[in-house]
Image (cartoon, rainbow, N blue to C red; front, side, top):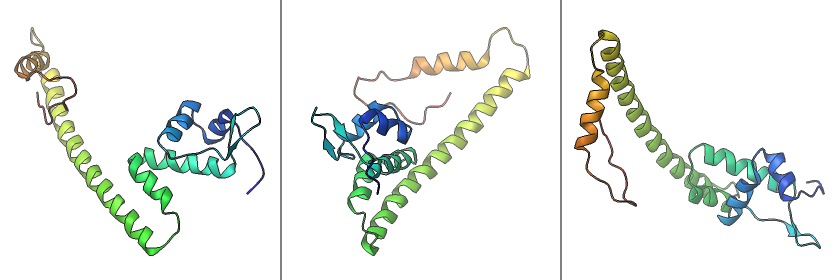
Length: 153
């Protein structure tokens, strides 16, 4: 590795993220400065740039921060690490399949609603009417509770 030192702004720029992202990943324990300057500013090396890019790619790929922490901890390339990574990927893949199924269902629903809108020129919009009726039937939610799933109009 080179002897290049980055401050937080330079690190963020080199990795293509805002400085708030660097600070966020630091608070999550995924990234640490190599040291501090005499003025107490954090500094990072090239390895931190690569690690930040890795975190960003893994997070964009849908891995949880906990999963990413596990991937970073077990960075030895062993068969045990590979099995651990495989189990994380299997869980993520199941979530992706669920999301795809939900998106396909949404696509069918939207196509149906589009046909309603394109089918005729009624005095009122049937889709808006259906949405209003569905909104009236929805149960009230309490802040902090998860939103109801599989709502259909």
